Image 1 (cartoon, helix red, strand yellow):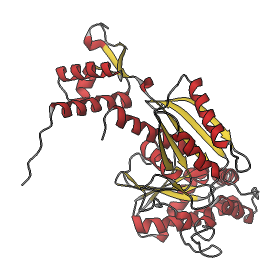
Image 2: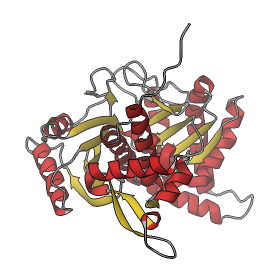
Image 3: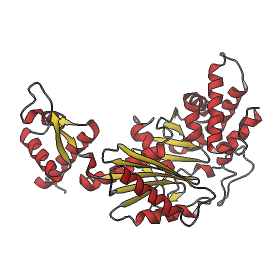
Image 4: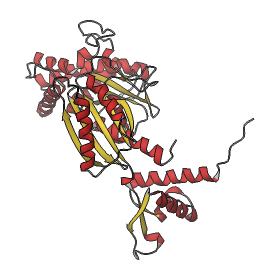
Length: 402
């Protein structure tokens, strides 16, 4: 027989503090009365926790509100967002994008660092120096946490990056350089997983606790959120759908190459080749930007066509939707997520038009009801997810969250 444990006074205080801090983070400045109404806590308890949080430097009085604008009930309390600072990285083969933000997740500064020709021995040091210069320019001397989104597998056991292809050497060197920053925690995560978190917290899947983000860009991948939790798998490979064997490719994928897998159907080079096959102009280099451009134009032309009118752009989108639905069906019949979000450059460019076509074709391939949505976290989804991840880590430290 087990007995329920009674919370100690210190545990109750910690829980109340976390509750108040999260409310101040999510809803902005609040009065003591508003905090009492939102938390259900008593007047003395709220007064004690506000005094305690002011002593720690996490909360401060920022003004007064009310008709009389005087007295304790008129004081407005806010989270001190400058109490800690974070940084976020979106690492690609051709360079990095970075953001410096405060505790509330507000962007203070950004920077782009292009890397040409695979980088060199000084690439990681130059990127790290840019981060520190960007932070100092925003008045930030110390970064509490840096979250890095990068392609490849992140081993759940070691936290190290493992490549499913050929990543530039400077990727690993950059992580090592960031880990040398004094007093800074570095969190590494697969970039598609970060985009999935962004869609879950601030994007198209905010009302879903189970969904799959399909990332359609240079290559393809997926982030799997089940019951509100990001799933990584035994080796961190959950969502590596670029290797998914599908009909319509030139062969089968191998342990060393995803060319014969789903990547061969909807990677950016395949999208551009498909566009050219329909007589549409598309960059033969077939990078993600080129695929985004051709899909964006096709959507605009198809939307302006008359009802029932067949155009090359419409036929291109139909075939692209067929291809995406093939991979989506393979995911859905295994996981039954109920919702698929299309992200990445191609998903963003296709918007609701492409999502609707994929949903229609997916319904023919799978007996499971699945809604298909266009991602709304935008082109900065990876950075947004990294900011959220770094912010969560800071709050666990400062707020004492589990």
